[in-house]
Every structure is written in structure tokens, then in C-alpha cells.
Image 1: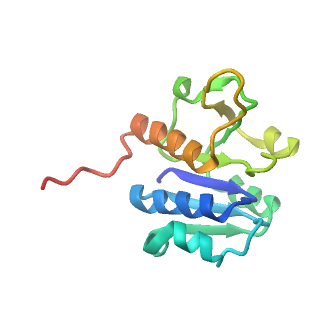
Image 2 (image 1 turned 90 degrees about the vertical axis):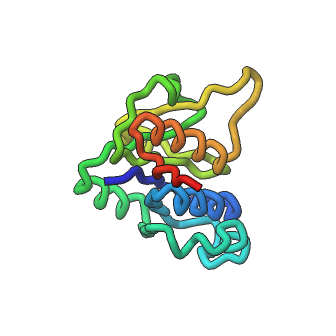
Image 3 (image 1 turned 45 degrees about the horizontal axis):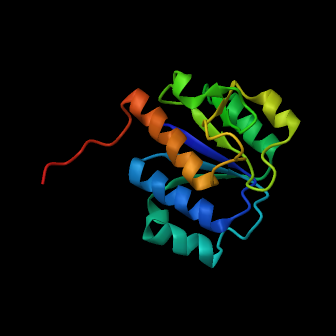
Length: 158
């Protein structure tokens, strides 16, 4: 099983496209929990994802309830990245089959989603700043999880 990224009702197609491109490069699976704030065939999504989108294992869930039903049968931990968490992502022991849940750019996730996760983590940033860009935060968290689980693809010799 590989690491998964779940996007809760994403708002910005460029962020989603960037995350999908990263997922293709690292062999990660992506779950989009709808409704999204844009049409998933959006031109900006495709521009950000370039021709990598066809290489992504992408699943769409029509609602949080549909995602929860799928997740309950998956035997995977659900790890929420949140600016409201207290534990740093670098102080957490990731497993290779974890799902990294990223909240909506405009509003994060509602309380019932916070209550449904197995862990809540934050990426420490300087005092006085609210948060990082969603695609950047996803890359930082996924990079740490892949580093810990030796999940990066092998480097090919030139």
C-alpha cells in the first residue's frame, strides 16, 4: 500500500493540479472529496498538472460520507494537516499506508472531520503567520512521510 493524499473540498484548481503532478512524480494516490470549488476538468487544473495527470491514481468521492465509508474499509490511518494542531509533522511516525488529509484552502475542515481523524499535525512556521500554501504544505508533509517510510522512488543512475 502506498501513501495517499486526500483533498477535502479543494477550492483552487492550480493547487490541486500541482498536488496531482507531485503525486504522479512520487507514485502517490490522491482522493478528492467533493464538492470541489471548481470543475475538475478546469483548464487551470490541467495547466498546473501538465501531462502528468494521466499518471495519477485518482479517486473521487462525492461527499465526506462517501469518503468515510471507503476509509472505514481501508485499514489506513487518516492524518489531518492543520494549522490548529499542536504536534509537528516531524515528531510523528508515519506509516507507508497513511492518508494525508488536507483541508479546504478557504476554511480547512469542519469540526466533525477533525473528530474523525487518527492524528492532527502541523508544519511549524514562524510566529505571526497563518499558514502555508496548500500545495506547498502537501509537498512538505508528503516528503517527510516518504522520507520516514523509505517511500521515495529509487534514483536512477545516469
